[in-house]
Image (cartoon, rainbow, N blue to C red; front, side, top):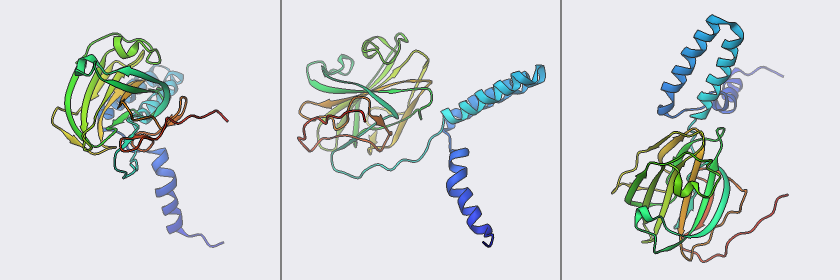
Amino acid sequence: MKFNLTHLKDFLRNSIIPYAFPHINKEGWKFVAVFALVTALLAWIWAPLGFAGLILTIWCYFFFRDPERVTPLIDGVVVSPADGKVQMITKISGPQELGLQYKKFTRISIFMSVFNVHVNRVPASGTIIKTAYIKGKFFNATLDKASKDNERQLLAMQTVDGKEIAFVQIAGLVARRILCFAKEGNKYSAGERFGLIRFGSRLDVYLPEGVEPQVCLGQTMVAGETVLANLKTDNPQVVGEKR
């Protein structure tokens, strides 16, 4: 078979390079630089330490990866704000910090491990109407009490359909820094980036009463792509089983 250089270049550009050298969020470059400098120092002290540092530097690079996502263009869509797994689905009152304690919601909790993409995306189209940042503890983010005790950034949104939802970035056992770029009055389309969390954490989404989740416990989420619910339908909650 005749060697075709053009085909090889296309293969590298479309199949190898995006996975081996993914685009990373600008917030990550300073961490990658620090890891690389420490790695160089360790390698100078003792080569095996340098190898260990190289592994950690590569992990740091991939931690901050920020891939493009394809958000479904569906009226009333609510998409996952984070990569990870659905940890809990709970009927609950809204967050008091956002003035929603007298309204009923369904809370979907998505846990992100240190290996997930940590760039967070807005779950629905609408306007940010209130924000609140609460300093707190750093319990394991898989615990239910993390929603009330851990450090967190809360956001309330009025969607283009006139409904009110909320979503919350929650720091975890390892995560010590929440970054949120969304401000009150900002308008977003579903799937747009609004922040990130370092390193391992959780995102909660509060669906208004009457809107049922279209995902199951243990299901793997893809930020900006996986449909959590539709604000314009009355479909029942989805159930599933491991296979």
